[in-house]
Image (cartoon, rainbow, N blue to C red; front, side):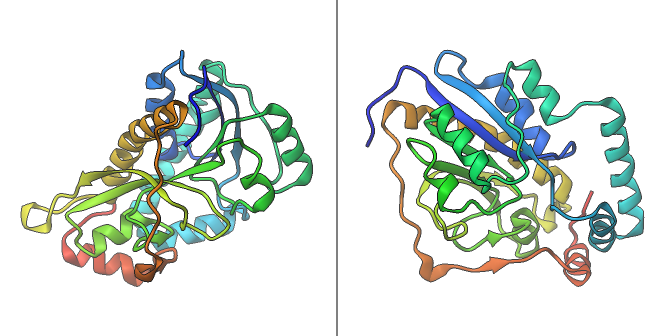
Length: 261
């Protein structure tokens, strides 16, 4: 357990997502305690790290033609509005720390020179390797919208819906070299509307877990600052890993009575 500090120096690493991840930051930048946290910088990385045409094909297969068009229109309107995570960060006075990769030695040296207490990962699109993991005094923490270690991997909200869980569990955990395996620092549960009551929408669930996850992250960072955070080791004997859902998985979700949007 570490000693309390005057302010917790936090570096944020996230991805450029104007639809969902931005919901986390709308709450986080509004509600974080300005007297307790010093947000020393934010790195906004590209989502997926792949050509836009490949992402479009992936989204077409995921949403299907009708919902793909609806999501595409939302995305286009968000871009036209020029409202982004970076514009929210600038409004909050958080400086940009640009990079091509969080594992680039030059970026790691810049980060170390900034002396962060914590690196906060929110949907960061890269796996953090040893160099960046060891760059902050108290290490790196990540937020994951699934119960660990059962819902490790991609799109945990989708898989929790498909498996008819009563709640989506949001987890803040320590980051280690093994994916989604670090000790748990805090969790919250977001209720899922069961099929018997009309079913739920993946869109609603993602938005709500982002918003509530921001408040969970603030709570965890408060406890880290006070030296009161205790990590609960994950029992990896229960581990599973889920990849990006296939069209057949989406068909099953809809057949159950849930919706994408």
